[in-house]
Image (cartoon, rainbow, N blue to C red; front, side):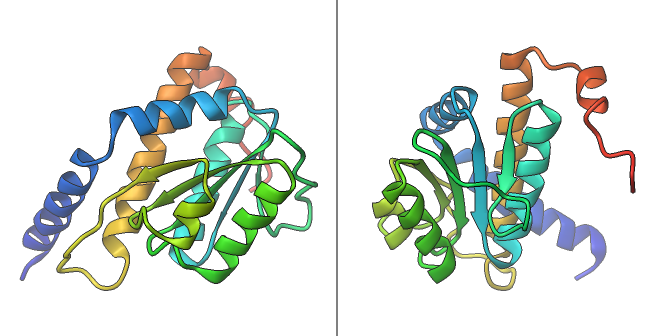
Length: 176
């Protein structure tokens, strides 16, 4: 397989996955985030990296956003939102954070490929990102699809909130 074929295979899988994501679930996620005082994001491994990207983009939009586990992450309070990413919906640490957030009165959103999972059963809202059979290794299809799905959510929120490239640039890191 050459580079072009590999890219084509990956793009076809991601396109199929994203085509199966519910517009209603994504709209509900946008509404939950837009109405939140603060958004916390969690995930482990590559799903966690996707979550970090999303938290950063929410910050660029002017929203209060944190990634769970950082030393500067504050207490989640009643009514805050936790967006938890896990392809399997069974990642122990992610499920534990979702349970703790729910116990603290937070709203839990699961972004997962497994609706019927520990994470899915803890969440108030499940955004299902299907990642069935893939030629790629492990959870690659979920992680790629989740990244694009959350970038689309950020883009939708940008429009909804009236954020401009200039307002987002003003929040972009300058110490890098």
